[in-house]
Length: 282
Image (tube, rainbow, N blue to C red; front, side, top):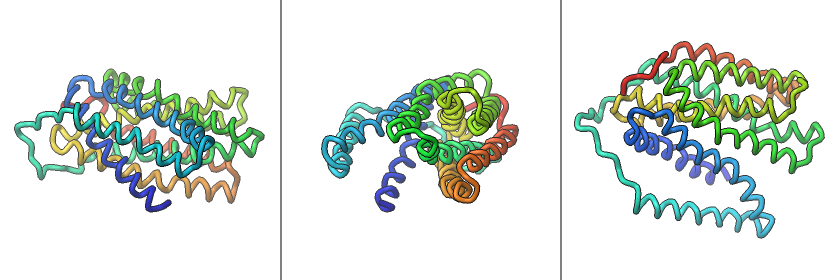
């Protein structure tokens, strides 16, 4: 399983760097909106994949169901090979120019902290729901709903970024995540799905913005490397989130572990002030 997830991770890591380069080159004046629309596809996949795989497992076995997932992968491979056009390379690009600027570092840290909140919460959300009386099916549907809100949140985040800039979007997302976690852990009168939706919107709205900002910080030089660096840092940080949340849950309980995530969201809010206020000139 570790080897399989390692291979999956390699594929995922290369995807965002290349897709961002393609899309931001094709839409230079509306990068946030374009990346937000692009993110809709990812949100649909995140939402439908758990439903699809459990349905296939019910029909056959987990091994056969997993093998069936190679079919859409092969289809996409064929479609990309025949119909995707590589963007023209900039006339003046310094292949060796890749600067770990302060903006890029703060962007990676900010997105990493928000992603830690997202992963830490989503990993243990089904467990918490089952412990509090939900069936496995109900827990799965509620957790899937948190993934589904990205269908609306990602294009919305891209539009906000194009209008108001990255600092506003990341700051607002961090506050919204903190509010959602506070309401979820305080036993508010609001339905659980509402508080979960707030957390999901706060996290997924930053995905397209992170990609767009990384491409603009690169200013045409090594966009893939810039995006890869940001996602690499966020991936490393988020890899600690399940262990940190799980350790706190074993020691103090799941609610306390979720309250710890509020601290991470608060740190992300502080880091947001070090991001560019408006869009950068690409």
